Length: 236
Image (tube, rainbow, N blue to C red):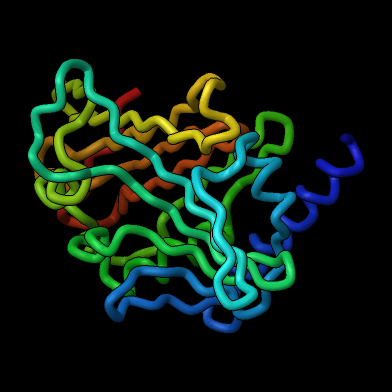
């Protein structure tokens, strides 16, 4: 197991290196679909299984391409009170056991432009990695807060939060999702995906995103300190 996890970590570091040179290793497809394409695939199916600790919700084979779908169903504190479907399907394509493409819900493109997405992914190439607690933290490398989504735009894509908390400095929205198990794992305990977003109370722009799923913890700081529109830091 130590050997396997070591190999996984090395391949994840290689992906991190590739993100630093984003345009040569990746492509964003925003035409009728939102996907991240790996031009020089590195990750294997075993890497995804090690990270997720769960098989995908659905496995299919189409034209010699293996397609995995992880379906994250939105959770509510009480009875669902939204008409729209805000579940998050993440679809992965593998060719010769290597990850070649990840597709996300197309509705994300309502608030995330292609240039913004490219800068976000590229910023992850400079993330600080902590191997022991399997976390990665990064700083958004943008120059203008205008392009950063606001609270209203985020709720348009994600819907109402599972929980929200306001302070003088920021407003924090927490979203909770349950990974839908496949038929084989149907009786196993559900895995949760937690997403926490902090917004500036003054202009309602996104300040920070924290995600926590299984073995992986990721965060991105969107606070651009020198911007006229985003001077308030996330409160502790």
